[in-house]
Image 1 (spheres, rainbow, N blue to C red):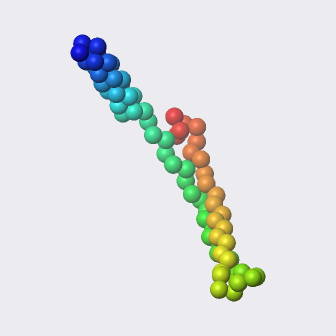
Image 2 (cartoon, helix red, strand yellow):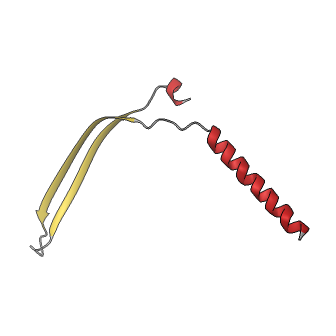
Image 3 (cartoon, helix red, strand yellow):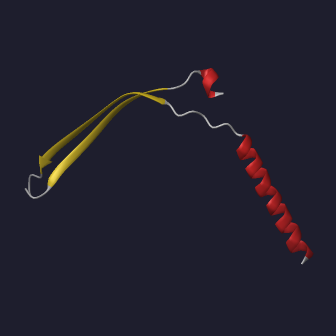
Length: 71
């Protein structure tokens, strides 16, 4: 039973270490969305008119932060 408690304590120590490291790690800011355009095109299926084909196109322009902001 002594070995089992040693393994458990090592495992518990690793978990505490993971949580401490995660708490200290800085989360980067998400990129800023500058532009967005959404276009939807629809057309009937050539073989079956009961089926509608739909295409959605999303155009986006995003801006990354400067090097100083990312650190």
